[in-house]
Image (cartoon, rainbow, N blue to C red; front, side):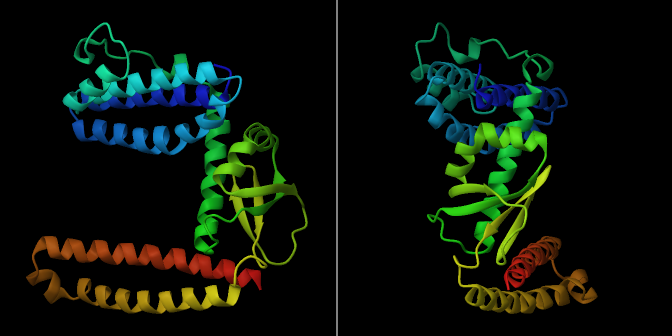
Length: 276
């Protein structure tokens, strides 16, 4: 394949095959199932389907169709031992097959054969940038449908190559209307760090900074009260000794989740404070 996204997903399938084989050989069926789930949703559906849409309208349409078909077939083959009936049904209706899926050979390729290191690095960098911008937008409550400008502050050679190759995808999936290089940032920007460089989102004129500060402060006050209550329970020897083990474990898990949420909200509030 010539398209970077196609070369990338082929390498991801090879990684998946090795992970699944290692898990099955060790009889860790849950690990095999989790790897397949993570790939199907996290790589195939979340990213490759989106990356492939513009390719279907361009010169790489035919290779993208072939790549998509191959990826789907490999995924069905590896899912078959865990989900035999539904995968067999999909296999049968997804094309003219010479045999049933149960009779299909098990994949035997490796990352050494199929992994394209350049494509892998560029697409994973692209994904990390999109995720970082999406996260910053969500933290700042930027309206989901609003396209915003992005400023490129600094970026190394590898990052520039990935950006040049995938800028259209980044702009579409991160809801960006422009990417402009600007070393000196204006007031009212929040920075977004990626491997090899940093970008910035000028948000001072886009969101109501004071209203967002008030919203986050109120949410932090509520969380602090919940954290105090949960911490008081898990630090109480009588509660730990008398409550069922599953109740104690659930309380500790709830405390950890709220502490993680508090850290995210504090980070978002610090970003807002930096806006002025």
